[in-house]
Length: 175
Image (cartoon, rainbow, N blue to C red; front, side, top):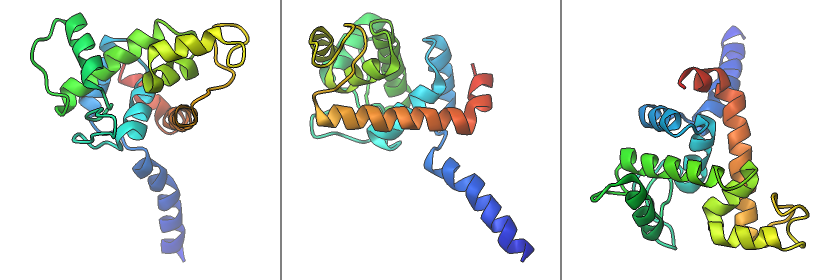
């Protein structure tokens, strides 16, 4: 009976942490601090973008853990002054992805609009913000017209909240 209670409690504690892992902690922590991005946000993007698969490639050609397209990588590399890079290298992909999260965070007033731009593109989200059907204030999205992006923002934001709930104290200490 005691074993059943221990297993049940352990499962309740461990199962969520298995579903929301803290892989690549060294890189996430380093670049999260370097670019002032919440580690929970970084983990949630990695989880939803690639499921922590370094070699992931999307149908649209986005690569690696944080699913960065070649054109976005070129832009980031230019801003970071990097000539050679490999998007399938975890360290590089996380560096580029976290840099891009900071870049977008500086351009959008809320996390959900920023996440929408990470998925659909900065230009598209800017257009949506100008359209009263999608934004009442021109700063935040009240509706996302792309179903795929809407689902992405929902899932990623839920993961962000879950990471904060599961690991808030740990993630805060790593900054």
